[in-house]
Image 1 (cartoon, rainbow, N blue to C red):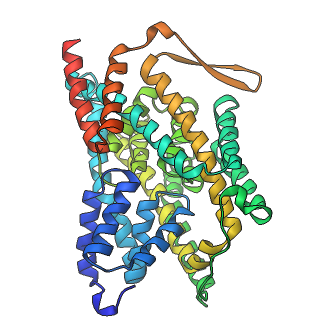
Image 2 (image 1 turned 180 degrees about the vertical axis):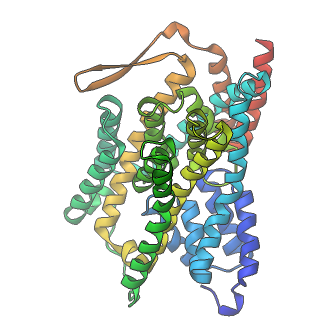
Image 3 (image 1 turned 90 degrees about the horizontal axis):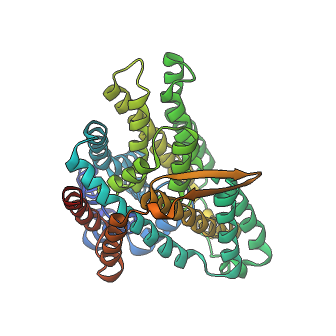
Length: 437
């Protein structure tokens, strides 16, 4: 950190973290840029190298990297209470907004104004996912081997329906093994020098892990004891806990797995509703992965017993948010004492590079899956042996969505407008189309 005299008091930090939480629109890139401007440039609470070091550490972990970056910097400034405050305040404003939007969505179906806005948002979501695919592809596919990993990941998840966790593990193992013998094949340079490790790192990691695991799983255990192991709250807690462990590569990679599991396996929602949820998450502050809250709300709302639908939806959304972000913060508090070692480990860097490449293939799968459901509506999954593919009627293409998607693409790629602005413009155009056509 900077000179102790320049460090903020805990009260000053709380105000800034709340401000960042309220203004953190635009996905991870925008959120990280916002934190850099406030914490490094304006407040000068963190030096540039330390900020980038923290970002590198967070990129190694599963979970939303921007929220984890806030947690880590909070921990650097004020210890555990600082990390908790930063991580919670980064998520809380967006979570409150997302809960309100989820409630409005569930109760407002059939209202032309709301349905028109969501119709336009679908087109925006399709373009946003394509933009994410291009951005992450440019960053992650630096060598032929990485391109091959991406291609195999796409084939595995799209045509073979392999589980996302299996793809992550296979990619990580490949990168880990290749990094020692041929790091250049993964775009990795030599090991970086390290500073001496903290002598109490194992004790701190063990304490954080113990407390974090109890906090993480306690609500799931309480729900299982009170409502039974087959209740939807337990299913939500277990499902999103599993996602929290394998959520490498950012929100768009996780969405591919979550969308197909929530729609095809769990049956909590339709593909169109999943697209709506992503569109709503793009308009809120905080991590994009707050879409998990939307999924949890609809699942609880529709399997409400013994609660009312609204109460069940609220409880389910809280459960989804709790297990997702408690796990995310656990990785920070347990791993922070080892940050220098993690940053300089060549094999770990190789595993991360391979995972990032696999994520590109997974996001390509998500892009195609979204495009089919947004443009054609009625899409059927077909299987022959181990192969899986989708069938649809080409004549059923919705030309209104095509036109709106073309406008969204112009806004994104030609005029470089922000995500929130694109979503709001497309929502307004969707209302116009709904009433005129």
